Image 1: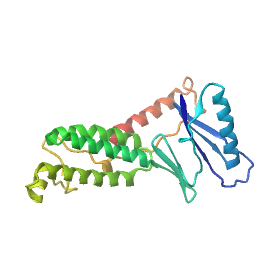
Image 2: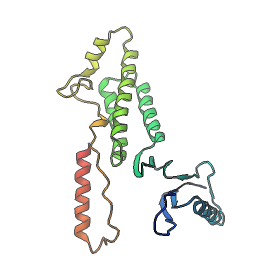
Image 3: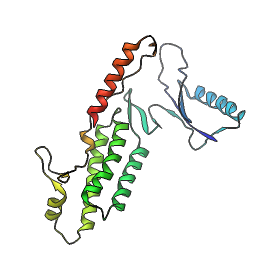
Image 4: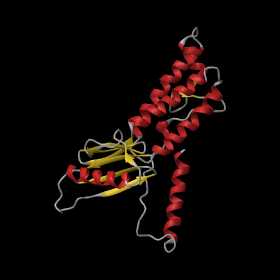
Amino acid sequence: MVLRSYFWLNTQKKKRNSTKVNFVRYADDFIVTANSEEIAREIKDKIAVFLKERGLELSDDKTLITNINEGFDFLGWNFRKYKNKLLTKPSKKSIKRFTETISQTLRKGMAWSQDKLISKLNPIIRGWTNYHNSVVSSETFQTLDHRIWEMLWRWAKRRHPNKSKNWIINKYWKQSATRKWNFRTERNSLLLLSKIKICRHIPLKLQMNSFLDIDYFHERQNKLSSRKSQSI
């Protein structure tokens, strides 16, 4: 068994003397923060010893020590500071996997009806945007809308190589009051990533007790449910 790990550090000097060591884990992925490269390397060595005693080891390919200004990927997101402001965005690898999934679905659906194609694509789009709509994703969503449009256009052209551009447009795209290019039928419409509402994550107050602060957890759950229903 190999644990995948990601290390990052912030070398910005602070007035108070602290190593700023923190540990965050999800399944077999984890990150450790520190305020210097030396401390990060020391922690990495300690973790390697800890794992070795248990028959485990760090993956050399997936273990990284980096500055927060360079950024790192974790759980499909990229964490990086831009002009001292930390931004979390969909990672390039996650975007690539999503694009490849859409492309594979289009290749598989060359003979499908437009309705069936939309019914296959919408769950893929909905699932990916639901995961990423709590981070800085607006620009990525707009870019992917354009990328999907280009793939759909190639899909339609391959289906009708002898038809004119206007014929293809009229068959597969409908105009609405707000948008010219809507890939839709009378019964179904392709989801647009750029129409997905960005809902920032509501941090959990760690001092709250789930048995004592019942009202807080009920209110938080209601807010999360309301935001989820509004997203898609």
